[in-house]
Image (cartoon, rainbow, N blue to C red; front, top):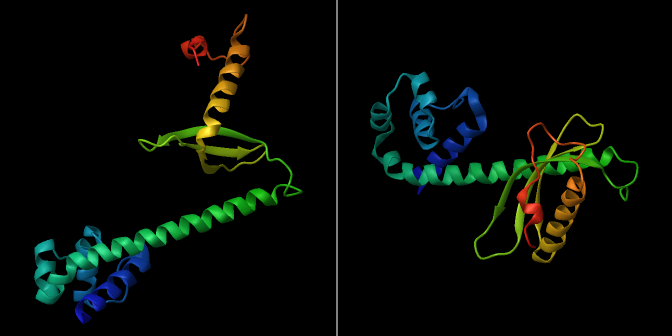
Length: 187
């Protein structure tokens, strides 16, 4: 399928060019790439409407356009995932560089971003922004907690809060904050 392969190659070339646009492509290639990548801003720069662009790219490319769009989106997703993994590796490397030894504990402040789980499974996912002490930058970390860790973690959190609220308000209580009811609920 030379039309498909050519169209996909041009769409990926345009995607690699980034925000500045489709790059040095012919008008037809640029229009096809803009359609495949769902970039109406690129169409607007060329002065073509969607209908005019579909007419201009011709029947052969119109037939393969849905396939090209799916393949380009899948490739962009793979590239984004690879980029994110590389950034995670760099962030971990930077984090390790702030410590003297690899075995040294890294003390961080953590702010919960989101929680997640999959129906039917007992593992839980917690996403935190963690900032090493005395560091200006945070690192987003997703923790996947094993089922056997759930009870000890829940018990520990409850004990920490129960002790902090015993007999008086915690030192870090916020104005208007009250003792949470879950502290006294059976575990």
